[in-house]
Image (tube, rainbow, N blue to C red):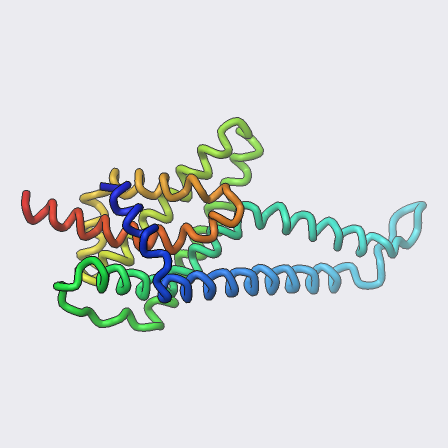
Length: 233
């Protein structure tokens, strides 16, 4: 079921609506990370404006430059773990369009649904972004404490979060928020497993940027497959 849904999604990657969401997600992700770094530098420069006075040594004016370069390397390090989750969260703002494209191609007999209002999508995206960033920052501590298990923690954590979010988006279009939560509970194991399989390529540069789109399309197929199984059972 999972692999069938995934390969159907890959086959549809040429869809113009897929490409639009991909480019929007990447552009907004870079803009957000650049803005956060600029804000961080501004706050840091204000805090150490004029240099720092140390006992015996006296006033040190070069520490700002040192911290500036250090912050750059810190942001590059953190972006390795945060860029994909952030991209996933931002892209989720537009994933309703991906789900609609999947349904138009593969489930044309379904009744059309109203698009999710923008403010609701924005609210869900902000909540998801906060959870993703918070969880991945906390996970960095686990990576340091258990470096041998870091990659498995990354896969399990982001697999759970991405699977939960993408299935919710696909299900909400047809069942509403409450119905989507119930469907998610009923298919918890399948969703987490599919999410982990989606998380595997997250550690592959460039390929990882396509995962939000593929994930949204794959979970749209999975949602309809679980609904068919439920109705036939």
